[in-house]
Image (cartoon, rainbow, N blue to C red; front, side):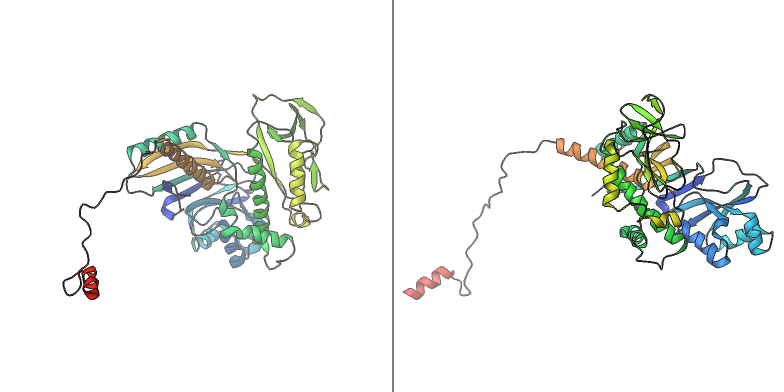
Length: 408
């Protein structure tokens, strides 16, 4: 698909900075380190610390995965008690800073009283430069781009897909995750094994999300609804609270039609889908979306027996909203390019936002081009004014004259 703008995630085109939701202290059981990296993933930083300095994996905390493209800034936490016992020293902050400088930049440090995890409500700030594929845009094209971005920024909500970088080149992470799940590849271990299995679950979520958004944004029977951090099942204009959604000992917990509440469509709510894992909450099988989910699980062999590895590795299910919300969006022209700046919640992908923006711009441009009337008059090719001169024989006569002379 040809776009007017190009986003190839070059280093100078992509900057992300992770924002903590709380202020750090001078004292605390956990050391926080803010790093900046290029051409390295989050897991490469973690593996470097685990393998080079033998740090236990439960001593390191982080809230999200940053890919190797672009310049990315991220927070890590370190359990001071575990690290000091492992290294047999209390000079943790100095040592970790020196070690991290071997693979990235250290921007800041601080202390806090809890470990950094994916449950922390972090936000990521993005600065992205979209480079024009043309030497110069026409005034009409600039106007269309401005109007399209203005419309999208008014209500900035986009499908909350997992980005392609989670799945690896040509979906390699998904394929390897499926092989691990089937017991065909036991050579992949540690965080890499965990990540590949999560990538496969994310791939299945994207398929479910694509199916669900085709049904529209209004709740449908079988939807899981999030209201004030509580999960409900939507069914026939009522919602049913799910009190046992974290019940231990069950791998797949189907929602129950109990504890009904009147649903107010004007109240603040979010439609959510499960990212499959251990103890997943599944829509009730008697609802329309529940029936589709059940068939989807059967087709992809998602069951307690097949997914036992997720329980063993403690890969729990998570909730993910249908839409991601972009906050504080701004844009400015830089010659023929556009610089976008916006914030996303942790777990959301800027590449998804950019892809949706580029598709919207291309669709609008194509619509305008198709609206231009096409001439139906026949095309008349210009006629030659002079007839083609006959080729002369080497004796100065034409071939026709030579043949006539031979007959005589």
